[in-house]
Amino acid sequence: MGEEMSVHNYNNNPSSDSSNDDHSSSDPNIYFRNLSLAYFVAQSMEFLTKHKRLREECLKHGNLEGHYIEGILAFFVEKDKRKGLFHLRQAAIGGYRDGWYLLGLLMLALERFYKDEKYLDKLQWKTNLSVSDHCKARVMNTLSTICGIMNNGYYTAMVNLECLTKCDQKNISNQICDGCYYYKQLKEFVEFAMNQYN
Image 1 (cartoon, rainbow, N blue to C red):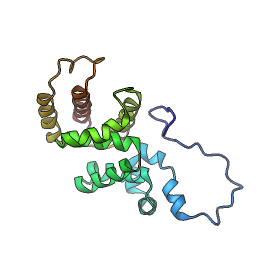
Image 2: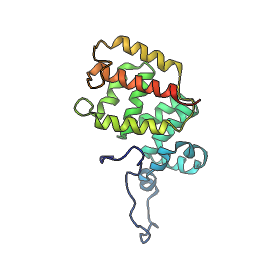
Image 3: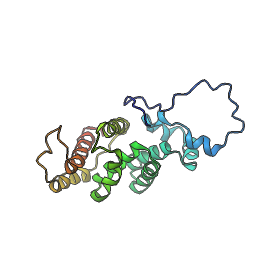
Image 4: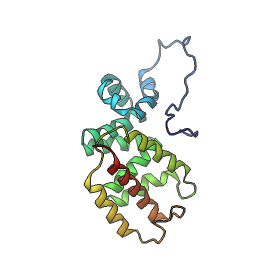
């Protein structure tokens, strides 16, 4: 995920013409671990409803995008927070950037403020906001395909985090300090979730 791409372009590894390749000795461990699930990141509900065997194989072999998608589905669709956070954590631990962003955001939304920095700071937003902003756009694009993601607790967490954030720059878009970065990320997520159709 090191190269810049548009929010809607989820194909990280453009495929080459591999029709002449011999796949007879392909190791399924390597195949399923490295299989690009970019389409399903953008259309996560299809991963839930139409591709059970593919889901199982990708998770079994540690596919990071598979864990990320599974985490989103478990957390927001199945309403199983524990399972959702487990899979998002697997994606984040493996280095999946969108997993870092979403897991950090959910830690804020669940008022686990002391854990948010661990994941969000991996995006190095203090030196350059572009990676963080790109991840945010991709995460919001994925979540826009899921109904009813809002939880009243997210609003409460936002209010509580605002109270903890002692900064006069919270409402100035081009000024970001440590405290208000986290607050702004959560505020944007809450506003987005509240405007989602239910």
